[in-house]
Image 1 (tube, rainbow, N blue to C red):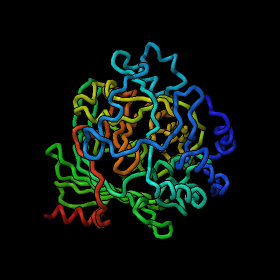
Image 2 (image 1 turned 60 degrees about the vertical axis):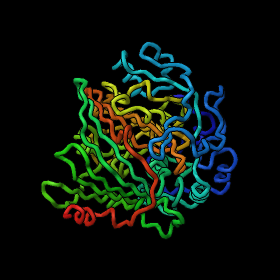
Image 3 (image 1 turned 90 degrees about the horizontal axis):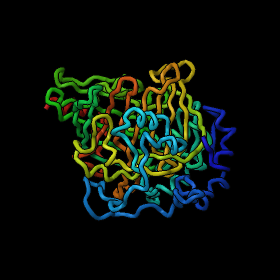
Image 4 (image 1 turned 30 degrees about the vertical axis):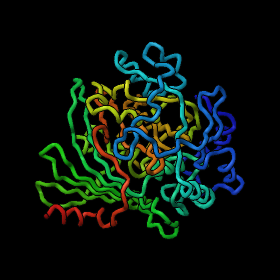
Length: 450
């Protein structure tokens, strides 16, 4: 792995510790967010050969042309790939590929490839988010061995991270609209190449961490809450799930499930970690949704450093395809997936002492501009690559931010895939926040009774 000069040299000592003591950036360091670093903590400069450009403020919106709700689907529509990575030439680009990407090229040499386009650093957020990230740099701290936070609100909590768990908190508290609604499909790719619609759902997601005017001292610690209703298939229609995630390490997630056949709401404490995701017919684990979904306490998090990689990026065009066009036999249709060269943070997760998880080790690759997970590789107890995930990001000027919903999880040993929250042919809207009472088991029960 090739590290990037002084940036990664400064991480060497910090990377040796998984859960260090409280860390806060000095005012002198934070000042770099207005000079050499972007407001969210990425390097403003491009790379040496110009294949990664300098950040110039991101993609300005609104963007004209076709859209799926609030997601434009034709950005960079006229561009052509610079080159294509295939099984035949993968060795040439090996330094830019994750182990999981190389495995997919080898496993599906006749159908899987990477179309690599010019890199565009499109991430742009509001000035309020930039101001909050700047303030967070010197006030936000981890507590409880890194498993909780204090002093954070409204922006990237650790724009200048010093360890792995801070990077992962940047992902969990990534930039989102205060409230969104969208629909999605979960599609399972079976070993024989057939596809099954696991569920189709309508979801409301709310992010109190990004409420307008929120202050650290007023924030309850709940950073995300959602409620969805299953629309298809018919035998599951009407089922509901409510989840509320918090920074409280003792009760990081509260969940309720409504089952039509039982006509009652029950607590669902196992909707987390490595429990098979029943929304996707058990084809992935709950914490593989959106790259990572839930608490950080099952792993120790080591910050390896930063490197340049080919990752899915600016994939708005994927949503212009129908669901049938977007999903090929064993993977997403590579003709509709855009890959670009970007700098990523690399974080290794190993099961923490006294904890358990079905996937003992994972490597996460997070884009430096957005703090979004791009790729995940998961290893079994023998250290062999077992699972790999690709997460496709979309530029959403209505937030403004780059967001992720769709993740494709490959079980390389079982020859299956799970396309989680496929948005093609669906809807996505930024909406006014709902009363938080909407995201409760009681609200679901009352609606079910009607």
